[in-house]
Amino acid sequence: MLPGMKMGWDFRTGIRRSLTAWKSWDDPCPGDFIFGIEFAPQLNTLPEAYIWNGTSKFYRTGSWFGLSFSGSPDLKSNFYYHGIVYKNDEVYYTYSLKNKSVVSRIYMNQTTGSREHLTWIEADQSWGLELSVPREADKCDTYGICGSNANCMINDNPICQCLIGFKPKSLDTWNRMDWSYGCVRNTTQSCEHKDKDVFVKLSGLKLPDTSRSWMAENLNLEECRTICLSNCSCMAYSNSDTRGNGSGCVIWYGDLMDIRTLSNNGQDLFIRVSNSEPGLIIGRSKRDDSRVRALIVGAVIGGVSVILLLGYCICKRGSK
View 1 (cartoon, rainbow, N blue to C red):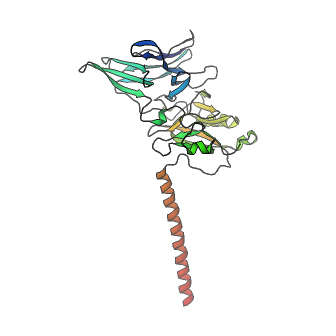
View 2 (cartoon, rainbow, N blue to C red):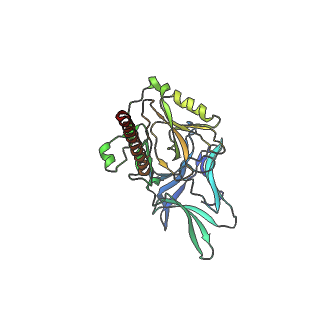
View 3 (cartoon, rainbow, N blue to C red):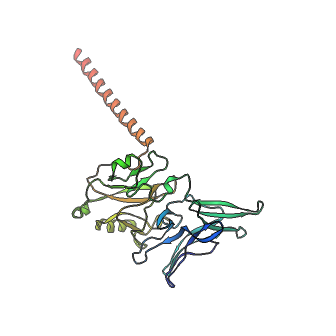
């Protein structure tokens, strides 16, 4: 794929363009890995870019939120601009060079399953790797590694945690670090009491897979919340564009897939939970647990000290 090329859907002609790996370095027949845009215009979902391994999702960039992809905001280049363009008659991924003299291309690597962006290094007369996704050392880049309704945190151990209000669907396999079954709600959700549900704000995230979502660019966040609350199938909501103070609305239905915590520039997600849920902390790290334990110990010691001091004062007054 060269600068200025479009990869995506043309609704006028019905043409869908994608980037497919060669079967091998010397065999240009189609390989297993395909990079393309997924979008359901009839459902008005939010467009996303995926890498497929055959018929299975292998990697997801995360939604395009006006400034970056929600799943990889740190994957920026010194050589080019890139993003998803969404219009009435087409939706596509493209990129353009900051310096027109740079020679650049994007291709799919059948061996690693990665989408690689290369630039030509004139001095070495060779191609240099600029960016590559998914990142080999980052397990959270693997699509759906934690299953549904869970959050992947690469710096924690284990890396997968259920979202607030959820528990492992299979505790036995979860404890064996097989998270493929994902998480289910702690309590069965009732549509009769949907108006009493609350939303918990989680920050710094790669937002869920938008395959089962609905988007409205003309709604604000409060209107988005109202619509989500009125439909008991709605699981979460967020802004569809994060530029400025944020705008637009995207709503998720059903299980939430492929969420992860990012080290920087992640997005806010408002997750629906029952108002009977206790004030749990999502994705709390060991460092956070240590802080909580320290606060509890400090409070206990402080309380005991006050009691002892009062007892001493009472005894001293009685001795007089």
